Structures are given as structure tokens and as C-alpha cells.
Amino acid sequence: MSEVRDTDAGSVPFEIVADYACETGENPLWHEREQRLYWTDIPPGRLFRYDPKSEKHEQCYEGRPVGGFTIQMDGSLLLWDGNYLA
Image (cartoon, rainbow, N blue to C red):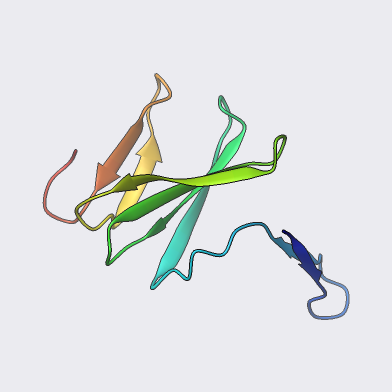
């Protein structure tokens, strides 16, 4: 269920593709190899992904808080909680 909203005049409209009621949802990152968008909900330690081709989204990780993440050269994700790398 997506919803398109207009933003300020002259800007690009955005579309809501998933609503997980994130506490602190941020760090959207496009995974070029997978052609999916990832984002995190930091305090509860959740990671989500969205596939625009299939329009499917899912929570793909739950655990320690995810302060940030990157995509590695081999396509894997590196999660960071501020204390250690997983």
C-alpha cells in the first residue's frame, strides 16, 4: 500500500512504501547489486529492506541497536552498533 505525497513546490514527490512505525528510522542505503533499499530503526535494532521491482518489504534483522551499516565489496552488509562490528 503506497501513498504519494507532494512536497514543497518544485521538489520531487515522495512515496511511502512501508510503515513500520520506526522509533528512529534512518540511514536509507541503496544496494546496487540487489536493487533493494535498506534502512534501520536504531534503538530497537531492526533493519528493513524494500524491493521496488516486486514492491515487497520486510524486516531482515532484529538484535542489537544498529547505529549504521555499509555494503561491503562482496555485497554483504556490515552492521555497527557503536561498540563492535557484526
